[in-house]
Image: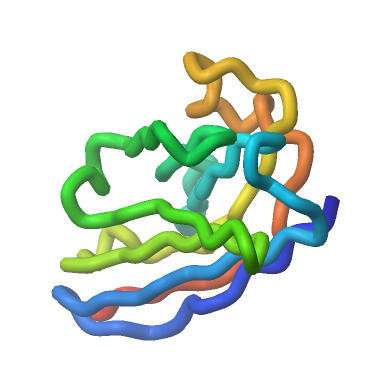
Length: 125
C-alpha cells in the first residue's frame, strides 16, 4: 500500500486547507484511515481517523469542530478539511492506513501499517 499526501501550505490564522491522501489500493471496508501530525521538536500525535466503512470518525480534542476527515471511495482518497486554523496547528501532517486496528486503538501510531510521506502545514499568526 502506498499513500501520497498533498495539500499542505502556508495559511494565515483562521484560514482553511484541505489535505488529500491518495491510496494505491481500495480503502473502503479494508482500512482504517488516519491523519497524524508532528510539530517541530514534538512527538507525532493523532489527529483524526475514519473507520473502514466510513461510518465512524474520531478526532483529538484540539481539532474537534474544526477538522473533518472524509473519503472519496471512487478516488481512493481520504481528505482532512481543516478550518479555523491556529498557529499551533503548524506541523507536518501524515496520512496512515491500518488494516487490522481495532477502533479503540486508532489513536496510536503503532496501530497503522502504512504511512504517507507527509505534507507540511504552516499557520502564520
